[in-house]
Image (cartoon, rainbow, N blue to C red; front, side):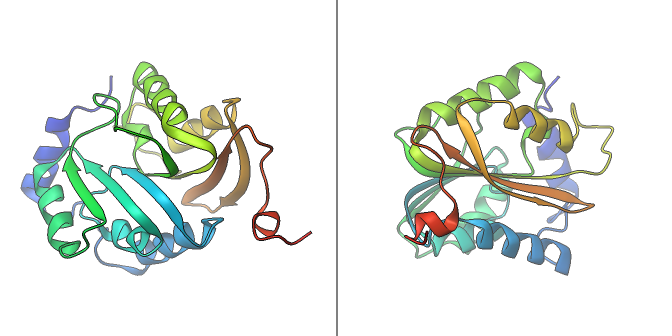
Amino acid sequence: MSLPPEHFDDIYAREDDPWGIEHGWYEERKRACVLAALPRERYARAFEPGCAGGALTAGLAERCDELVSWDPVARAVATARERLAGRDHVRVEQAALPARAPEGTFDLVVVSELVYYLDAGDRETFWRAVEERLRSGGHLVAVHWLREAPEYPVEGTQVHDELAARPAFARTVRHDEADFRLEVYARVPPEARSVAEETGLR
């Protein structure tokens, strides 16, 4: 079964930064890898389901004209809103996909350390919602922890293997480390293009 919102409420009740997202070189470097992997310098409208306290959100905000970020935990949303205060183009909401789907379409969706919390049915609903809301030619970024996590419904490797099998997406970037996998997919059609092709290089 998918881990329920109450699971994360309990975790945040015990600790302000339960996964060490706010501090430490590992998380800081991983955020830098995510931002460096974005094929375009700027995006019109982006969606980030599962923003936690907004550490990655702050970096994405510099690359997007409009950014919608969600998290199911009230405490995390409060932290993210405080961090992003004054950035009127960023909207942080307490919500969760797949229980709810965002309005409108996007040319960037960033899914970070999230989908391994979902069971098979919810993973299918999650990716289908992303497919429906990601514009043709838009980019999906997925990054997940690869080491064993027995409390999760599925491990990160399986999340990425399932994503790679979806015909709506064509992978343009894959970065593997012992700890995490980072991939970028283009919503097809049109034919997926590399970063060089995106910027006019042949």
